[in-house]
Length: 104
Image (cartoon, rainbow, N blue to C red; front, side):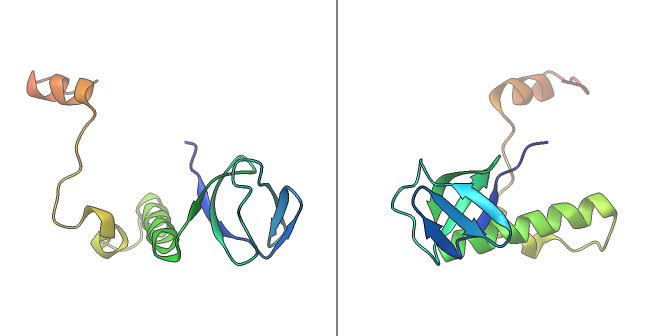
């Protein structure tokens, strides 16, 4: 599974940023500055994030790790963006589910 991770930039040096020990390519987010949050995938910042969105993503990643490790049973608070709604399946999987298929 490939997952982008929010990272807060400690320092910016040209087209590269540093977040902890990670060097991040900022070519796609040239406006990023020290202190900003960016969404990083494979060492490249894909887009800027606000602090609230970064916190939501980090909480969801913590929830995912807890589920995968079998820790706890109450994860709802870690997935704030899903509050009050059911996640939707992609159209092809919803069609398979509606047709009664148990596997995609």
